[in-house]
Structures are given as C-alpha cells and as structure tokens.
Amino acid sequence: MKAKIIIRLILVAVIACAAYFCYPSVHQFFLKYQHPLDDIYEYDGQEITIRNLFVASSENILYASHLNDSGRRENYLSSASYSTNNTRTINLGDSESISYTDLEYERFYIDSDNYVWTVSGTGRDSELEYCNFIIFKDQSYESLSSFKYYEGMIDGQEYTAYEYSGSEAGTSPDVVKILVPDLNKMENTSVSFNNTPDSTGRVSVTFTGENLHCIAEAFGEGGTSSQGYTQIEYVFDYKSKNLLSVTLSGSQKFEVNDYNQRIQTLSFTVDDISFDACENIEIPKLICENSLINDVFSGDTQIQPSPNFKTEMADNLEQSDIISNIWSDTIYSFPKGICTVSDLSNSLIDNAKELGFDLVMDGYVINDENMGALIKFTISQSEAEIGCIVMPLVVSGDGIINENNLLISAGDTMSVDNKCCIKVYHTVSDSLSSVTCYSFQLESFDFAYSILKEAKISNLLNDEELSLFAGADSENLRTFASDYKQAEYSSIDKYAIKEGDNQCGYYVIEDEIHPDEYGTIYELPFKSKDAVEEKTGDNRNDTVVEWIKFDE
Image 1 (cartoon, rainbow, N blue to C red):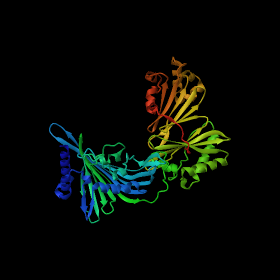
Image 2: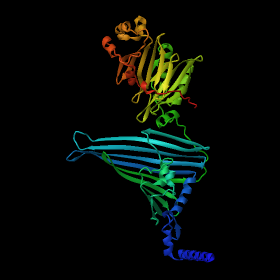
Image 3: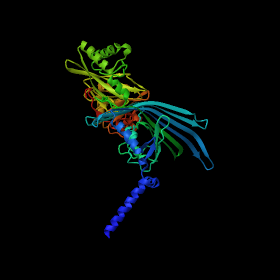
C-alpha cells in the first residue's frame, strides 16, 4: 500500500514538471508568484531579471578602484499661514523656501581595509515670504554653504571627518548604499521595469513605497527610514549592464498650525568608474569642522594680521614695546601685510632672534562653535619666558579676520576655555588682584569684562589701596567701608562689563544676596554675584582646556 502511494506521488510530480516546462500558461501561473525582482524579461534574444541587473552593476561599483559621481539635492517647502475666527478663515500670507546643493561623490578603494569616500557639496538656501496685509512687508533671505564628508578605513582603522563653510549641512548619505540598494529589504515596495531600451540603449527600474527600506541604511547606520523619499529610479545601460544614474524623489503634505507641502529630489550620475590600481589614499588632517579655519592652518588661505595689541604686560613696558615692534615689523614686511600662518611664524622667529629673543608658535585652541581660533606665540629670553602673544582668528562671513591681539606677561596666569574665552589673572598687591576676560563677540574678539578683587573691604580705608581700587567712587566707597559691619571679614569685587557699545561698572559684596539697599544709601552700583555672572556668562560653567601643540 505504501509503495503505491509513493509511486502515485512520483507520477504527479513528473506530470507537474512536464506541464510547467511544456505549457507556457502553466509556466506563467507559477512565475506570477515570484518576486518581481526575479521575473524574467526578454529583449533581442537576451533574458534578464531586475535582480541580475543590480548584481552585475553592483560588482563594478563595490570593487572599482575609483568611482566618481556628480549629483544634486533639491528641497522645496511651501506653506500658508491662516487665522480662523468664528465666521471666516483669513490667509495671513504664504512663504516658500528653496534649497539646492550640487554634490560630488568620489571613492578610492584598495581593499576592504583601505578605502575612503568623500561627498562634497556647494549649496544655496533661499526663503521668500509674501504677506497679504500692507502692514507687513514681503521678505527674502539667502545663504550659501559648502561642505565635505570623509569616511573610510586606513589599515583597518575607521576614519571619519567633516568640514564646512557657511552654514552646517547636516548629514550626508552614504552614496554607495543608494547606488547598490539592499534587495533583501523590499517589503511594501512596488517594482516596475521599463525593459525595452530607448534610443540610447537605456532601461530603467523604479521602486515606489512610503518607506524605501532598501536604501534606508544610506541615511544612517541602522537606519529604517528613507527620509521622505518615496520613489527611486535606476537607469542602466542595457548592453553593458552598468548603472548610469539614480534619482530619488518624494513629496509630503502636512498641517501643523499652517498648511505645508515639501517636495524633495536627490540624484546622482555615474561619471567615472575605473579599475586601475590605487596605490595610496590621501587623508586630510582637519583640526576642526570649519573649512575656513582648516584652510588657514594648512596654509591654503592667507590672513592679514593686525598690528593692534591689547596689552596685559603693563609691568614691563620696555619689553612690551620691543615685542610689539617685532610683531609690527614682521607683518609690515609682507606684501600688503598678507601672509600664511606658517610664514608669519617663521618671520617672527627670525626677527625675534635678531633682538636676542626666542619665539615659538606653540599652541592653538578652536572654540566649540568652530567660529574662531586662538594661536599662541611664546617669547623667552635667556631661556626665561617673558610673555606670550595670543592671535585670535575670527570667522567673519566667508573669510577669517584678525582685528587685535593680546600681549600677556609671563608673570600673569592665563586660562582658556572651550569657548576660546581667555582670562588673565594678575596680582596688584598683597590683597588686590584682577581678572580680565577676552572673548568672541559678534564676529570679533574683544574685551568682555574685568574684575578687580579686594580681599577685605576694610582695606579700602587705606588711601593707597583705595586709589588702586576705586577711581571716581573713592569717597563713597571709603564711607561704605567705614560703615559696613563685616568690612574686616568680607571681600568686594569691582566689575567692568562690556554691554553693547558701553562699559558698565558694578560692585559685588561677598555673600550679600540683596545689596540694593547699600546702592541707595551710598549711591554706588551694587549688584548680587548672580546678577553680574548672568551678564558675564560665568554661570555657564565652561570647561578650561589645554593649548593643543602644533605637532599633535
């Protein structure tokens, strides 16, 4: 009985196979349940599937020694703002923003442990606002930016870097993961194939879906979103099976208070693909993400050093004048006063030696916002350090400026924080000390504030100490010091703070939270410590950093 069942099953299988291969209608019945990627298409005597087309092109892309693509990214956003009352809805105005970025992708490949790819772009963002009421004016804005991403491996070590100028560009896609989609992630994605070559011998494949999982990894490791792109078209040369171009597109309509519509496209064209041996890979050394600063440090961009000094070297005016002259003589020796940082350093070293000084460019700091840098030159004589010059470089528009410099005595202590704020600590007398802060402010580096610290208020009863501390407020402060009950035990600080175009002065009494009553009685500008730190920014708890050596 069992043998008969087995024989019958074998007969059924043989008949099914014969029908599948001998009768086209049966053949097609089974084929229609295959994934569209595996459907067989025939043209001019050749059979091909979409999957095979991608496999053939991906091998060239993944293992080419050099790959170069050009591309373009465009985003369009339109919105309308409405106000609704009980009777009607009023259109307050419309706005639209347009951004486009011309892209270039380049990859160099030696092996799986040595390769690098870059995506660079230059873009323009513009925004227009149209108002429907005469009390508001139509407005327009425009900004330019450029960027470059680097990613790869050198001797098995991962390498990533990013630099920009203008506004930051955000993330950049991994272009290869767009050119070579993951065909194992085609859920909820429809596939169409224009399999008849056009007059130029090209065919196209289009994937459509609310979320194109096959390219999601291109927008971030572990990514699950295609970032609003809902359609992607691949164009191939039918004869060579090479990928020629790819275009992503998508549109969204949404409502958050206003009515908005977003349209975006991203396209790449394969310009060059070669398999000639790649012998070495060049990796740039970037010190920060702002390319304007990188170009200055690398010597690709010249600067115009300022002859101006803000000196914190008042205790030794003779040496201060000598160092100032070395600096000014150096910068005026360059044609039009323009030079690279390296040329400036070398010339300063030579000019200092002629006068018996040693000078070295020995450190730099980049501020957290990548909008400025400080370079420190240390000066010594007979192996004894006598001071340093700090040259601020400030990003202004599409360039770097240096409007003034600091000259700081070796007898003073200096600190620098992650915002590139410099504080100079100076001892005036046994009980009197000062702190002067310089910081980046609106595309400049300038005086921010100073604090003169008196250890005991009672010391202000001494005429010499009072003259060093008080200035025009001498008499009122003397009276206050005489009356204040804790004068023997409390300190007082005198603040000079730059506020806009003005410099304002305040006094802070130790441990006095509400000193206003003293201000009224003695006609002095008393403030609490919290109030002045709100003005100086000292309540931010910025981090003190070390100067970075140039050989690091």
